[in-house]
Amino acid sequence: MLPVGTSVTLRAVRDANGEVTLATDTLRTVAWTLTDASSATLTPAADGSAQLVATKIGRVGTILANGTSILYACTTAALRACSAVGAIDVVAR
Image (cartoon, rainbow, N blue to C red):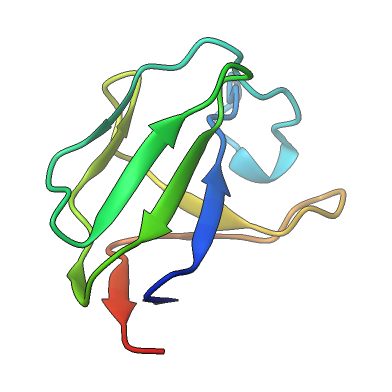
């Protein structure tokens, strides 16, 4: 869940071994797509990341990175703890 007005930075991670917790290299060239912008905006950055901003209560559309919609939320510490993200809901502050 994201409160209206908050933002998160998304990064696409190179995952050659099928293990996202060990992935360390972020992709620098990413085509980001948001299928429904009624609850959030997605703005790509020059470094390959994208800024997701929650704008209105509802569910964020599918986010695609280079055509893939598989999303994980991970900690930034080494040996990341990651969880699959099924949906992102925008809620009132």
